[in-house]
Image (tube, rainbow, N blue to C red; front, side):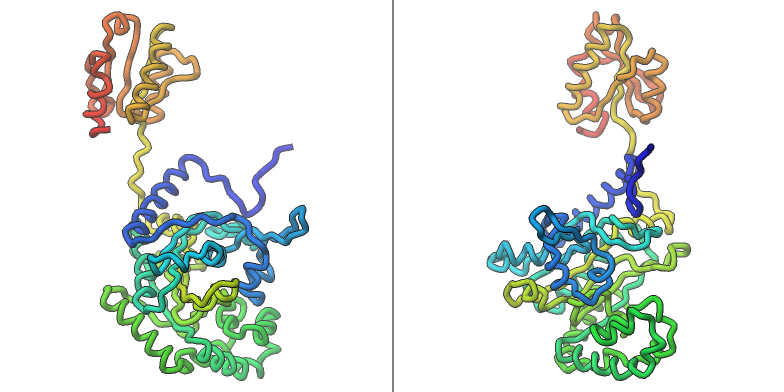
Length: 425
């Protein structure tokens, strides 16, 4: 009986990993340019971290987490998102005591959620995320949004839409919560079961419901922007002004609330408007989460961040027909004729690799014709041909495949010659 990968997971094979590596390298370079440093947290955490950090009322905690007891009877959860784990690492390792503030962190890694698999959404998926901890400056909100957009733009995406909202501070949220309860209570029985529960636990999340999004009460729901106090309004205006001076376009959507309990003040999503991308258009989302560090036992610390799904990013590239500039060609393939040449080919390949040149040879016992075919399959830029005559003269034939030219090179000059031809490797 054959064993397949679990439902909701996929194997990323070599042809695809080249794209992943290019995307990740591009994003890392941008993160470094913005002066963010990488953090790597465990793939599993204590379940309580997500219950307290993400929120008991969220779909993630209630329905989607992979949770199990370890042999010590502890409740462990595969991380469903990266923010809570990053903030936990910040608190546990006392990064708030670092003289360089704010702490500007980024992460890559797999996340796990038990939900119905669909294109761009799997049970194991991968995220790049940013977290800035220790700054209440509205300009850092704009910087975080700008970095997210820069990642997509650097890879060539153009059909992008930034949607922005403010959830306000604690007082604003409390007043808005009461207004939503008053608005939705008369039509409670017409809402889905989840929204009936949300009405008591976290009514803001009703606005994020996909099931009830066409309910008439949604269209007439009060706007959070009408319940922002003066401090929250001023903060939101400063975020928008920072985006304006950065030349970043945005649309304000009062119904944008995000799906996690820890958000306050700035909330945003970046969407793809590419034709054929699919019904779920969100590429990245994030916002401010002042208070999350305190919720998991740390000091009072303002924070803001975002996460983007890498599978969805690659899907967006495909929707916009963007070909990544990936060079899959091998630098050098060595063709050996005869036993002496085969042994010498082992040395040559090793020397080339030690000199920084990508090199390979035949390991299937192929005849000369088969070795040349193998070189063609890997699109080798140069093919080195070695036989008894070349060994006796201590030379080697170097064939430039693109030009179709061939040159005999002294063995002692091979490495510097190839380094020069390959651009100084």
